[in-house]
Each structure stands twice: as structure tokens, then as C-alpha cells.
Image (cartoon, rainbow, N blue to C red; front, side):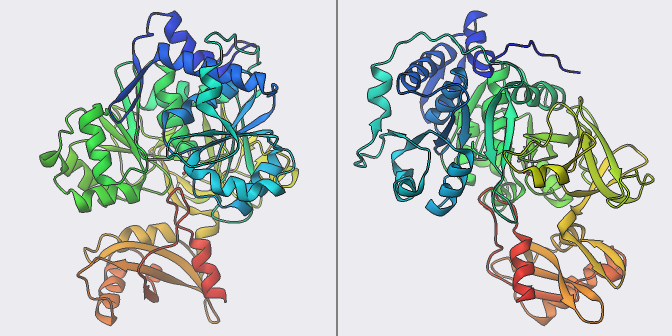
Length: 520
Ligand code: 3SK
């Protein structure tokens, strides 16, 4: 079990402690050619923290931080937390209407925003009920009439004592990007933010001071917040930040920043493999010691191809915004079975239950995953959803899993993605993984489409690779391949070819949109 003192502030644990213990010259952030040491990061956090206090931000206030992956995003979250406020990072692609919902729901007082993301805030502003201050980081010379981040921080004091927050005070709020419905605020305390590093990053990744964490998950995504902020800073290591990174940018960052732990999502690993199948021949990737994937299940195919091309294994994990980070994964040094997500992360317990009775199902049978540990589901102001998602102290993230005889947990599907056809339960992602084995297929999503006779049929939406010929022949090839690989009732009775799949900003396939299309 992880223990934390009653009074604790995440910002001091991630920054000040390293300076006080002689690691002030360690590089905390690499961004392009710039390096920010822990000593410099502390000063930047203190200055912004003092400026926020002077502008009236109080402990407990919510401070919206709207940035791409840049150093100011890290500084802003830590400065808000250091003065006892709650950082609320916001995804860059959110539009004014979505921002109005989130910011009003959180009753935020302040917005810190990068100038090229200001227009949606300006559009939202007349409808924002509680915001009384907008602070803009000027980088692109975009004109505005708000307070200026550089002016405020230049005029502020270098020293700041952290607010005496307790371990159970809120430090972070993240709205679920949601493949369905209105975004909900997931709240996280100072203790819980630290616990993601002290459980997953410590035990599964062996995070250490000489690591460089890098990749492309956005910082406002719980996955990116852990990978690129909490994990490296917890151990005095370095985070490599790259704005809007594509496959080439990631490879450049590996070479230039010496990334040791590469964090990304399956789509981006696949893009790296398609564009740079022998990436290590074009770039020096020797620094890599492992890669981490989440967001969508990783297929065998991607795991094997990446290992062949880049010489490292990808550790797949399941996490959610509500749980803050990964709670099932393999650990470094364990034999990875790419057919399973892995074991409960040390500190967490998992069981697989019958959703109707709440009883554990026998090993080998599919059921709903229930999890408890140092983080858990805690929605902001949504007692209805909270009661459904946290039952008897167990969080229900909404995933269907099998607890195997070998103790590993094997992912089947999201609860919503289970297809029931003629009485058979068919996990869509299982069929997707098999279809994706075909070389003609670039991406695929499988859903249950309404069918009078069978209730639902398995339907595959396929993005073919550039030179594959979409049509009846390919459909037959796909269907035969699935019938030969899985129980034949799982084959897609319908296949539709599309140019792209609908995705959330964090890269998750929005199967709900495909289902809606089929219903309309
Ligand atoms: O939503 C996810 O897929 C996720 C995975 C790992 C860590 C955090 C999150 C939100």
C-alpha cells in the first residue's frame, strides 16, 4: 500500500524536492533545443503561482490550462496546484460550445491559454458564468486584450511557499473526452496524482532519474499527463515535449532528446511503422528501452512489427481518465503475452464480475472488470453517474475482460462494444484484431449493426491500404480469414469500406458514431 503524509502538495514533490535534494541541475523538460532544469522549473512555477495569487486565485479554485505540449502547460498546472488550486487541462481541439459546458460545470475562475488557442475561449467568454480572468501566453503575436503571461511572470517573485494542501484535496480535474455523451469531470487528489507514478511508473516501467519520457499523447489527456508530466518529474527524470508530433517528429525527438520510454497509442505506432518501417536506420533510436501503449487495445501484429523494427517491446495498458492512469499492464522484466493486457498494477486489485449480480464469474469467462486501488472513479457533481460507476468501493470502468487461469487479464471489448448476434456474445475488438492481420487493411472498426433475424450482425468498417482494391473480392478474403481464425459465427457478415474512422481527439475510435449511422 502507498502511504502519504496528511499534508502534501504535488508540486513540491515533483519539483522543489529535487532542487532541495541536489538534483536542481537535472534537466526536467526538453522542448526543441531548449532545456529547463529543475531549478529553473521551480522558479517558473513560483513566479506564475505568485502572479495567480496576486490576481485573486484562491485555494480550491479551478484553473483551466489550455495548451499544446509545451513547457508553459507543465508550469501552469504545477503553479495552480502549488497555490492549492485545481488544474483543469483542456484538450486543444475543443470548440467554444464544449468549453462552455466544461468550464461552467467546473465553475472555473481563471483560464491560462496559449495565444493560438484563444479564439475559442473568446467565443465562449460571454457564456462563461464564473471566469473572471484570462491570461494569455503570447507566442504567435496574436493580438488580444487579456492579461499577458510573460508580463505577469516577469514582475512576480521567485519564492513561493506551497499552500498546505492535504493529500485528499483536489489537484487535478480532467474531463473525459468521451466516446459517448456529455463530458464528465473526473477529479483527482494530490495523493492520487502521485500514486499513479508510485504504482504504475515505478513498478511496471521502473522509472528512474536517468529516464527521458517522450511521446505524443496530449498533456490534457490523463495518459499524457502521467507519461509526460507526473512520471518523469516524480523521479527527477526528463520529459521530452513535442508539439503536435507526427511519426517523423517522434523519431527526431527520440534521437535528439534521447528518449528512453516512448509513450503513444496504437494508431501512432502503426503510423510510425508504415512511414518508417526501419526507423532505426534513418534515426538513432538506441536510447529506447521500452514503449508504452494505451487508449485502444494493441494488436499482436503491431507489437511484433514494432519489436522487429525498433528492437523494443510495447507495454500495453488499460487506464481511464477516471482512474487517472493505467491499472492493468505487464511489468518490465515479465514475459509479455500480447494476447493479454497483463496483471493488475501493484497497488490495484481487479475482479471480473457478472454485471447483473455483481458476483465474480469463473476464471476463463468474460465479465465486467471491477478495480480498486489508490485511484478510483470520482465525478465532479454527477451523483447519478457516480452511483453507477463506483459500487461497494469498486470502480467499474466499463470494460469486458476475462481473468485467465495464468492470472493475466485479457481484454475483450468495451461494455458498449459487445455484439450480441443470434445469442452469441462477440467482442468487436477481437474481430478487429484478426481483420487487421490482413495486409490489405490499414484500419478497421467492428460494430453490431441492427438485424431483424439475428438482433445484430457483425459489421466491419475497413480503411484499406492505399493500393488495395476495395470490393467483393477483398470482402470475401476478410470473411474467410476471420472464419478460419475465430469461431465462424464471429465473421463480419457486412463489410463497408471507408476513407477514415471517426476518432476522438485522443485517438479512440468512436464506434458509437458508426452504430448511430447504422441505426439512422
Ligand atoms: O483512456 C485511456 O485509454 C487511458 C489510458 C491510460 C491512461 C489514461 C487513460 C485516460
